[in-house]
Image (cartoon, rainbow, N blue to C red; front, top):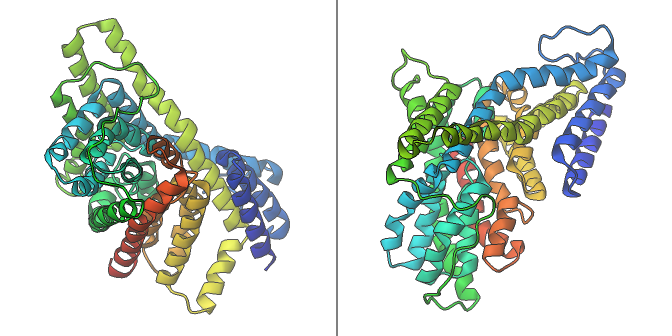
Amino acid sequence: MLSLIIGLAVTVIVAWLIIQKYQPHTVLLLAGLVLLALTLVVAPESSILFKKAKSTGLSFFDIFDYVRGSLAYRAAGLGMIIMAAGGFAKYMDHIGATDAMVDVAIRPLKLINAPYLVLALGYAVGQFLNIFIPSAAGLAMLLLVTFFPTLVRLGVSRAAAAAMIGTTAVLDLGPASGASNLAAKTAELDVAVYFAQHQLPVGIAAIAVITVLTYVSGRYFDGRAGHVVAAEAVDAPAAEGDAPKAKAPAFYALLPMVPLTLILVFSKLLVSSVKLDVVTAMLIGALLGLLCEAVRHRDGKAITKGFMAFFDGMGRMFARIVSLIVCAEVFAAGLKTIGMVDYLIDLAQNAGFGVVAMTLVMCAMVIVIAVITGSGNAAFFSFGHLAPTISATFGAAPVAMLLPMQLTAGLARSMSPVAGVIIAVSDAGDCSPFEIVRRTALPVIGGILTVLIYGVFLA
């Protein structure tokens, strides 16, 4: 009982500090270290060593050695995958391939003269683009510049257009997503198998539901606000960051698709005799882009300097995502070693809970944290590490719990008024983040229910 009280108390403090805008990385790391230290007092029989690491010979040092072990393990494995994906995405943006892909994808929608149908289909197209552009805020900014003016000119309100764009990355799908890679690694699955066999079926169902509800929500809230469907002249929101880039050739739109294509083809799904690592696929895609740049510009110094965007992107992903995974893993380890997780499992078993009930409880925790903090990654990374232990107790595969948790974390983020992407689109929509969240709530809740029904009950 003492372990549960301590674990809950630390978890509540962590949530409160993150709500108060304290840096999640630091908060999770310190909370994990405190829990590991308390384990030495409350449950001295529990090991606080990382996996099969050897003790330093002093328990006090073992607490910090856990962080070293986690950092070394994640940086060399999952961390390298996430960094490579981030570097590839950054380089594709640098050479204009991302812009070209967005331009090609939304071009057919501009030909449809049905405002709310275009609004709904815009979500589906944006979600497809998110597979290759894993940054929710980055994708939103691209769509604000390229697609937002079209929607407003067709007659959709600025708030409706902004809200739709704010939901385009609610499902973290594909090998470029850090959350997807963590879920796949934690479930001990090939990321291509996780994407094609587990994410896609439930993802397609959720996309269909969210698309329909985006149409319903847009019409309802615009009608309630007295919005008249009439064309409005509007300039694209000013893009932040680098100076405008020269427009890339149309065929550059294919470049962001290269790594995913290679990963899916050379995997257990198709060509099983060849195993292509995600990092290798990202590197091949980036070097192919470098080759295209060499043919396009013929300026060796500028081209080689431009490729530094790949390494800059890797560094940013380490600082933002990989470090968060490590800090969250330390926090999760503290909850396990102190005995809170085992206590909850015993409590659930005595209450007659099964894996479905526990999955719903874990998803509820993730949703609450994501809405409060505005970060789907912080929510999933904090509790995703616990899924294998809990699911194994009930004789279920880890993916049965990890998949719903991972998808609901991304979905819940778009219901948070403090999420970066919601704040970004609210400015373009000339409304408050709370107004955006009101409009996103129906599609997002529909998506969450779809994920839970399909992923938990029908899988």
